[in-house]
Amino acid sequence: MNAVRTDAVRAGLEASAPATAADGMEGVTVLPELDDPVEPVLFDRWYVVATLEDVRRQRQRARLFGRNLVVWAAGDQVQVWQDVCVHMGFPLSALSPNARGRRDQEEAYRRGVLKCGYHGYEYGPDGRVVRIPQHPTQKIPPHFCARKTYPVQVRYGLVFTCLGTPRYEIPPFPEWDDPAWRKIFCGPYDVNAGASRFWANFADVAHFPWVHGDELGDPAHATVEPYRLRKTATGVVAENIRIYQPDPDGSGQGAVVTYTYEALGPTEIRFHKVARHCYGIIMFITPVERERCRGYMINFLNYDDGRSDEDFRRFEDRIVAEDRVIIEAQRPALIPADLRREPQRPADALAAWYRNYLIEQGMHYLIE
Image (cartoon, rainbow, N blue to C red; front, side, top):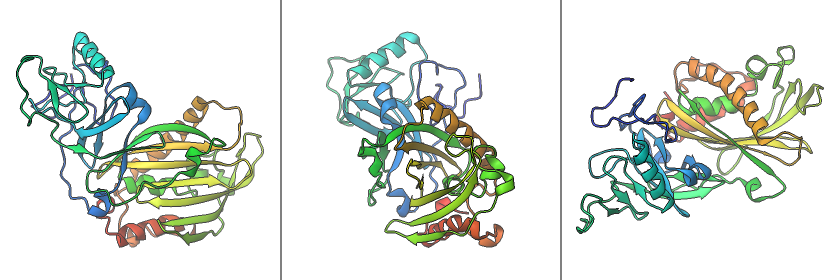
């Protein structure tokens, strides 16, 4: 059994991973709560903590800005709470190490109740403890309730929460409600680096020939032509980004492909290919900790190329696996504020804009 990182709890809790019956008592890791200062300009935003599909199936554990969360649903009511039982500090996201206990928790979940895996305390969607099995006839004191609850929005099949006071809108994704567009969830992808590194990597086409050769790029055709940045209400749009790709449409013929990237926020970004058959990705990055993040991606396209959803996921898994090697090796783990530490060229115009944006907005949690 692996070492336990806190003495208070002994449960199978790999942070930010879904709770499953297989968690049991093996490989126990409970990450301590962090209290790194986070600027309101970041803390007061909405971040993804789970997919709606996963939450409907089972409680989920999440981590945002170093805070441990439990995400669960009672019917259509999705909840995000501090991940601790009021009784004896056991994580509410954890399943019992005993098969009978897990079955009892799963049955309670189907009834719209969140049952603690330690003593069986049951919580209703309003945050109150509604049943204490050891004292079934006694009145439950009002202070027996979830330690802290957070606001929730469900958008695009994702569960968003805000740890602060919500002051910003969730970025728009107009293709979501348009039936002409097919949507495929990919990820989530965990990266041991700051959210700013993941964002900048996603925004960068110049690395395609070297990191994603034979699929997204070719070292023999590495030129990135000058492109234009256009300011928007929420950020910037990078237009006319052209790069050669060996097989952009599955025909086996190489071609120069034109991309449009849109900065939607400090942890949100999207791109689409400029073509009649249009394909794109929108990504929401969750700052798990200052130097750990998780990316949720939605692929969208307006044509049928015969590939299944799993085909798309396998491809995206492979691309992100290659990117992860690069991102996790970068030092520092956050984008440095001093441009002299990482001099950039015209092909890096979008990343350079992003660095300046984080500095100007005072988002120091995402930069070093």
